[in-house]
Image 1 (cartoon, rainbow over the protein chains, first blue to last red):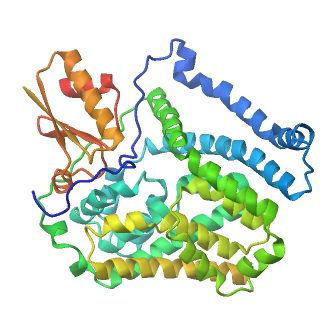
Image 2 (image 1 turned 90 degrees about the vertical axis):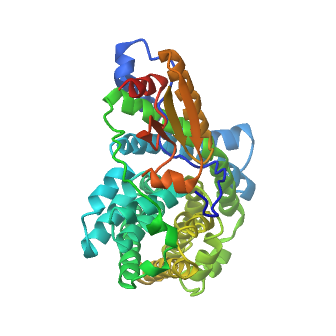
Image 3 (image 1 turned 120 degrees about the vertical axis):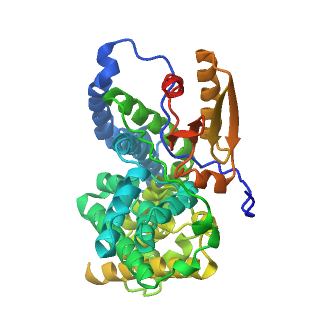
Length: 365
Length: 78
């Protein structure tokens, strides 16, 4: 079928799990996931000894003063790199494991029966845990719309899935505690809910590209998920390998930026640009954040350094959401199913939501 | 002759799935015709929402993940 879309090579496509193909482990204890019992205590041990170890390394081995700019930047990097990678491994292990129970197909079928605001809310919540990557946005969008998921709920899902990133959520929990993690989840779901609700009310169906509704379509009902526990654990371990193998350069880059901010950017400067009194800092954070396409994990060290230097929470939250949730590549991909008007409205509504969150938190906190 | 279709836009995971499907067919001694479906309209019209996907004799069996060779063999038998 020719529709001018062509084919393209998206290296990021296919975010689903890969079942490892190697030889199964010999010991039944290890095979049934017993290695987790050995690995978890080791993980916690390393995690808690990290700070003293890196401070000793910076001051005693490299001979740097921890109070100096270079010293504090180096210590930040040495401490944060293993810390973020350790935290990410644990988070990805847990998230990938949970995701073996959830599939976009199941989410679609749940949402197909819901109309109205409840559908939007449910779509926003399911967006958090359903595995999603922007490369699958087009087939997913069509699959949702064609089985009768309301357009508004589909948008709620499409906003929530990348914006309330489950990895980002648990990283925030590990790095900053439950308050900030909770704020992030609640505001992300709120934006997704409202954006989808508004878009649904605007009756945008006529702004879909014609082929979305015209293309012959059969809903598939493949159940990928009749897996046994050890298989799910294997998929989770493979997920850690896949994701860490892919994102470590982003993370190191993020930590390097974070270390620079930590060591060299004076607090007075930060207060001027990202403090709560600078009204233009929130829109600026969004404008800077959108074209910056980074992995959720890569933004964390930057967020950490910004907050540490006294940047306002709302501004930082807006920046983070713009980086993770609104991405140019995803928008370009969605152009295949949405006419320019709808793309513009979609971006406008989500960006407005992020701005409101930014201002709101700068105001009340 | 078994017809095997691999759905996906040519990413690393689609290649991996293709390799594994070929290996699974060889292990079973199946005469397999492996076709890669890269056109997004075709992928969508088969109801696939997440790539990579695999169909055996026209029936979609896998989507959104790469099973092990052993699991693919089971799918081809069933």
